Image 1 (cartoon, rainbow, N blue to C red):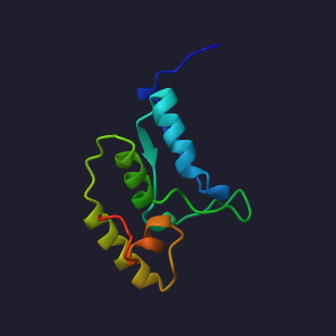
Image 2: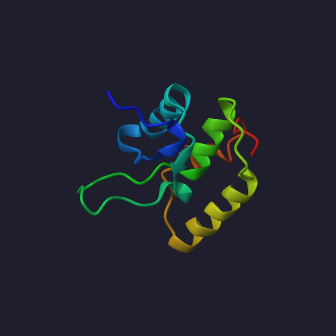
Length: 110
């Protein structure tokens, strides 16, 4: 079976069935993939797959990777501030998991 080095692959995940973060962590941990597409708040979809969920949320991706020990040069506070601005402009809630708990007393400190 041919092998492609993890540093030559970038992964693009939609959060279908809520599995995007699990897929990213598996790709990072088991296959050495370190490049991932994401979108603020999990915005997006797929014009080819009717009803496809949005892309993996940047804030969820960064949080999960850092919690798993990855070094990710992204400022979570700035990411969440950008998400709040986009959310306000669109006037609809995000699908990201982190945005749903951000204001709760047990929310992770970002």
